[in-house]
Structure formats: structure tokens, C-alpha cells
Image (cartoon, rainbow, N blue to C red; front, side, top):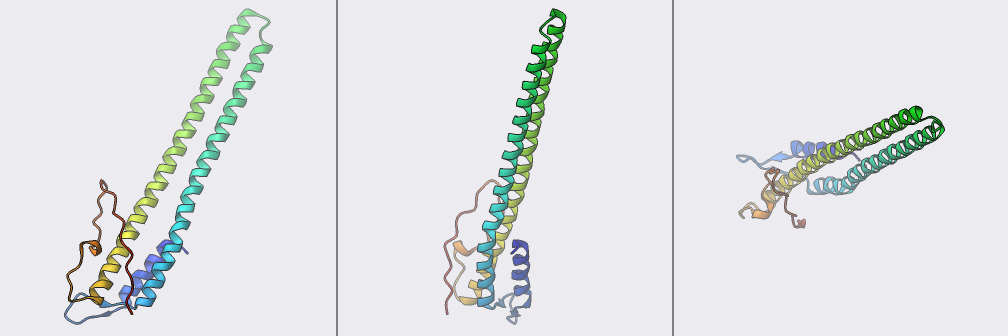
Amino acid sequence: MDILHLVDRLEELFNESRAIPLTRQVVVDEDRMLDIVDQMRVSIPEEVKKAQQIIAQKDRILAQAQEEANRTVQLAREKSEQLVQKDAIVQAANMRAEQIVAKARAEAENIRLEADRYVVERLSSLQLELERILNQVRNGIATVEKDLYPDTAPSSQTQPAQHNEEKEPEAEPAVEASD
């Protein structure tokens, strides 16, 4: 299931929740929320698989570019050997072969750079999406904990995470549901 669809369902669950009068808190159906969180846990590895597929695609593109470069170099060598009969033709052929090799290498490098940029862009996008989802889940857990334990102050572990690009988020301990 698509992770964004699950996030929408989680948001819908909060929107449908009953408000506690005179507070900003709501009562959430714990079973439905935990079901959505479980589905998110299943869906996130699928998103990681997509990222791995992108990396595999990049590797295939690089392999194809290398193979094409090798073919181009081989063709250049074969042509230069055929033209060895005359000095002027040999010099021209050598220059042309070097140009073809340089062009093939430059094209292969450009393809590799474009593939690397694409992978970085997709992985960065996935990372931001996963961080956003993680923050939403943390906020949801914090909200539910406030409802479950209204008399206790929120612990530092259940505070909603602030987005900070320089600091990686710390792993959150598992929250056990009470009956």
C-alpha cells in the first residue's frame, strides 16, 4: 500500500476523532491507529525497495555506457589498423580514434553523473518523505499518549521531532499500547 495513502488515512482518523471539550485533544480509536501504523511499517520497506531499484537501474545504465564505450574504442582500433598503410592516413586515424575514445569517455562520464544526480535526487526525496512520515507518526504517538496519560508531563522521548537537516533523528523506543 502506498505510504502517502496510509498517511492520509492516519490524518483522516485524527480528523474523525472525537474532541475533548475545552482542550485541543482528541480521543483516537487505538485499534485503527495501530492498524495504520502497522501498515506503514510494512509499506516503508517497499519504498526502500523502490530506492534500491533506482540504484540497480543506475548500475545498469553505467554498465551499458561502459559497454558502448568499449565497443566504440574497439571500433576505433579496428579502423586505425585498417588505415595503417599510409603515414598521413595513420596520423589522421589516430587523431580520430583518440577523439572517439575521448568522446565515448566523456559520454560515459556524463551518463554516470546524470545517473548519480538522479539517484541522489530520488534518495533525498525519499529521505525527506520518510522523515516527514516519521514526524507525523511521532506526533500521533505523542497525541495518543497525552490522551492515555493526561496527568503526566510528556517525556522527552515522545516530544514531536523538530526537522533539523544537520542532525539525524534519534531512534525512538517502541511504545506499548495499554488495554
